[in-house]
Image 1 (cartoon, rainbow, N blue to C red):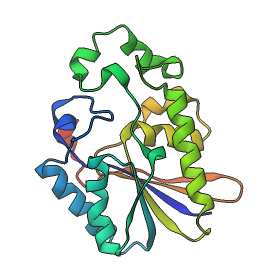
Image 2: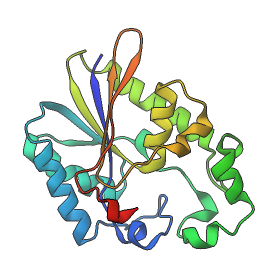
Image 3: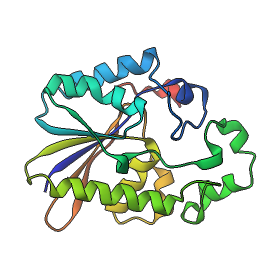
Length: 205
């Protein structure tokens, strides 16, 4: 089975300002995000990527574009890679959301959380894991392909394929423009890289 690169989109103003973008249209990479996407393409330039799949949202497509250009590939949008549907929480600041009673459920018992007017974490995990499995079936065991998605879907997918309880996904950190790699073998899945972030700095902690 193939090697799957799970890439989070690069920085945008929602990320920088601590707001939940969700599936809102028109959320574009900021200047730093564009630089991150270019650095990502340079980092992956020597990796023999066979295909690039992306969430259809603008910020993921923008992140995928330099990588696709470097490999002369066409970006294939896949709705299964979409961000979680946060419903009524979209566009809100994290500071404001932390004051809501449901925030404790998000952090401590996310397996029971459904966003008002939106999706549950369990539904999102099933969607993203099925999508990755479907894409794996389209490739040979020696292929490497990239999926450009969002932080929570990537964390949920990693938890699923490692056989961890859903609630453990909150223990992972997935930075903008970071790479996590899952190797799909005949009988199991191995996590080769988690949250490889070329821009990591202890000053951000």
